[in-house]
Image 1 (tube, rainbow, N blue to C red):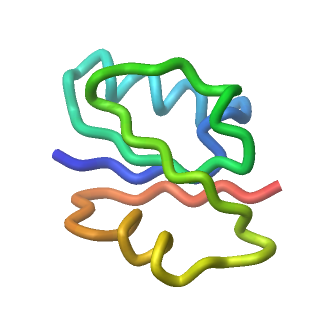
Image 2 (image 1 turned 90 degrees about the horizontal axis):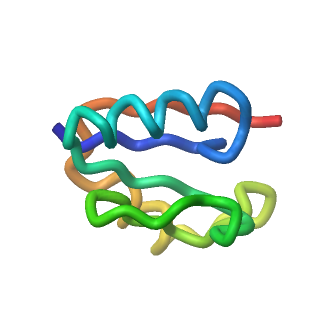
Image 3 (image 1 turned 90 degrees about the vertical axis):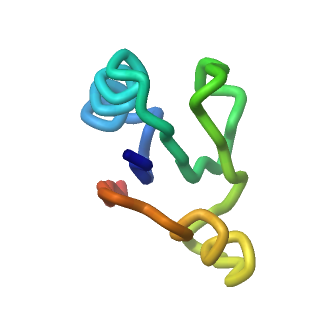
Length: 73
């Protein structure tokens, strides 16, 4: 499965990220500050601020997702 998570550095997003990586799924996430996330071979991080959306980056992030979790502060 390929899981998409926004807000992966937040309270719920962090737990979801760890859960799906522990299950060996591919995970993609959007982050304004990728340094807050732990690197993992199955994790792809897209640097993007959802307040100023770059359509090309957003389209790449959403490509071929099985499941999508959207958290916004």
